[in-house]
Length: 195
Image 1 (tube, rainbow, N blue to C red):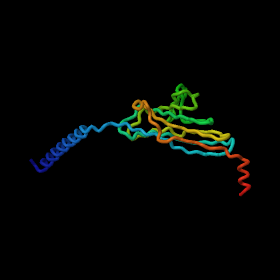
Image 2 (cartoon, rainbow, N blue to C red):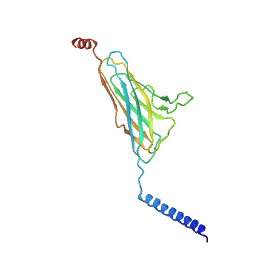
Image 3 (cartoon, rainbow, N blue to C red):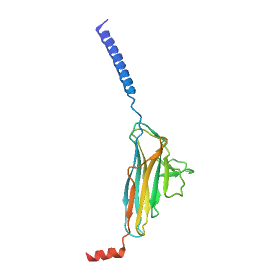
Image 4 (spheres, rainbow, N blue to C red):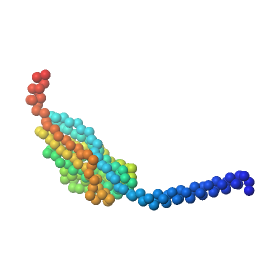
């Protein structure tokens, strides 16, 4: 056997030995039984333009993020947004209705799965994504909230995430709280005169 053939045989033997070691290590890791955990966090990010004047429109733009920080996928995710307020908030976003005849699918669109007439709860599911894999984030982007205050106003938007593995849901880490009052124009004018 030549030196070249000897070296080739040693390389083959070494690769087989290395492969055997890797198989043993994989088996030991599986024996450890690392559990598959589903860990979902969800949260709001938002920005608001507030005008504390009567009959001036206030608005906000927000996103609701659902992040899988575990090592197991969440299937059939859907979200719930609950609005409680003493004023009529107008909520809109990039979503379709269940029986919509819209033929083209919007990218990153969501489908509203509860009654459109319900202004206090909005239930949505993504139209193009049925799972949230470990490390992935699913986002309901750029929803809008508008209202025209006439006096004091307050409102809260809470978020929840559900899926096949989360039938009881997960609460969002934060919520959107809005509180304010309309400035009295006469009182505001008196303050400017005193300065």
